[in-house]
Length: 116
Length: 109
Image 1 (cartoon, each protein chain N blue to C red):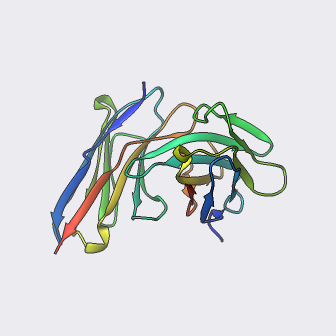
Image 2 (cartoon, rainbow over the protein chains, first blue to last red; image 1 turned 60 degrees about the vertical axis):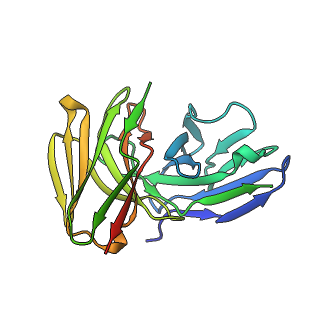
């Protein structure tokens, strides 16, 4: 059973370009979470999605960032007009259910975004 | 606000026991988790406590006291490969994980 897949693993963009990060959850998982990690810091929640629904986007910047989890295909985190401060590792996690105490979030390998 | 506090760095020798503490203040609490992360790697789930007490999994144990908003991760028989960052995380009322800033563990021979 494959784990959480993320691609690309490394992404380099120039300021002003767009970055698209993809996440395929574990088989059977329908809940996807995106987190951002700056160097030497903990992970910060960005957004929680289920298929075709954004459940909680309280951690996502209001501008330039968007996320989706379509009926078919991977979840996409999109960053428009990237700036140097967007350079970070972006991790996706998935779980089978969201009921507390009954499931664990499993993390993908992350996408390391570098903005030049 | 929501916050988790844990020491920034801990050093121990191979074969020893080390305890990493975590105190939390969050809106809603559904459990305390611990994750391990090696440099450049992904967080790997270690343990989860929803109820007070000690959970043991091999060389790793995790403890929770909800009344004290406190937990710890205990690592026994330390090995060099245990050198990594360890994060405590609370699942809040909306099912997202709130992470601490991490404790960097250095295991020396």
